[in-house]
Image (cartoon, rainbow, N blue to C red; front, top):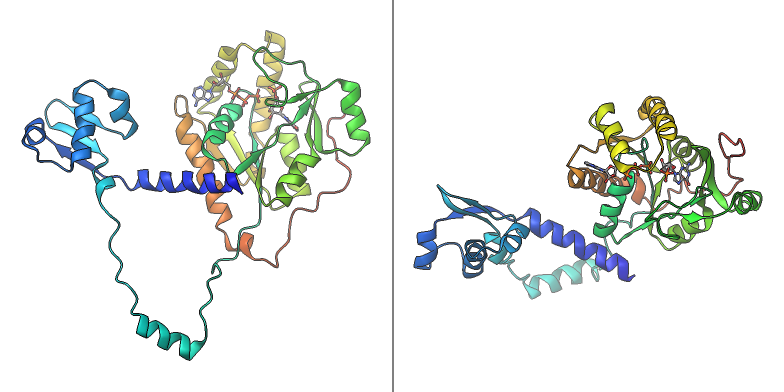
Length: 322
Ligand SMILES: Nc1ncnc2c1ncn2[C@@H]1O[C@H](COP(=O)(O)OP(=O)(O)OP(=O)(O)O)[C@@H](O)[C@H]1O
Ligand SMILES: Nc1nc2c(ncn2[C@@H]2O[C@H](COP(=O)(O)O)[C@@H](O)[C@H]2O)c(=O)[nH]1
């Protein structure tokens, strides 16, 4: 699948970046033609010539006292050379044991459902939007709502915006995996999106409120649930106020709800703090959790099928008609 290939390429790129090492060269070394390598010198020269973006991308920093600190020197090094297997010995092994199997030794990981939840304004959308850019291997479900579209929101990207009547029709037709009334409006997960992605072997990400997370955990016990929180209540509320999407009365409801939601952290598998100004760190943590969970042997055992049996009627919560 094309997007899986892209995902693997992204992971390889991240690995390469992780393996980069910091080295230091002085301007004199550069002028002399010494230093780590030609392309590394070029990177530093970019910085000297005032192209900060080029050098920033590879993590280069400048130091007035020590010269120029460069990340990227190791990129020039070849992977350690592997000795070639002796063909004669290979023949002897195959003669003794029969043809060697080229199938992957690790069983493939079954697709997982990842639930991202947390209080309003904590940054769930911000985290997921960044994750989308990095992880083309994941499917991000677009949920449905009866809430009116906010300025800047796009149909089919942020939500499927539908009337209350239409939403209730979907409930009656069992088209929603989960639904709830959140801040007085219907929100629900179109079942078909989840089923299609899982059937294609793709991991699915759901961004839902805490009551929805509890419902999905009950329907899909082996889902990975992650509660995103902020540094403090003060930081959370400042974020919500700065977003300017709610009038004061509705904002107060969200803050009161956030207080109650925080008590539900214990029901989640993971809690991740989306620290102020450190969105990327939060995204990396979420991505790391997903990778670690997918590497768990229990998720790879082909005979284990726990979890994805969610084909009974959606259990809406707080089903007071909005
Ligand atoms: N790490 C961060 N540091 C500073 N600001 C952030 C951070 N993460 C998100 N924000 C900002 O906080 C605001 C709220 O974020 P966002 O809309 O993603 O929250 P949310 O959890 O999806 O909210 P809701 O549940 O109401 O949809 C946005 O203006 C966003 O840009
Ligand atoms: N239980 C569900 N909650 C959902 C779903 N889709 C979104 N949400 C959550 O609603 C709140 C408020 O969102 P907003 O866009 O009005 O600010 C937020 O916490 C979302 O995660 C869903 O399908 N089910």
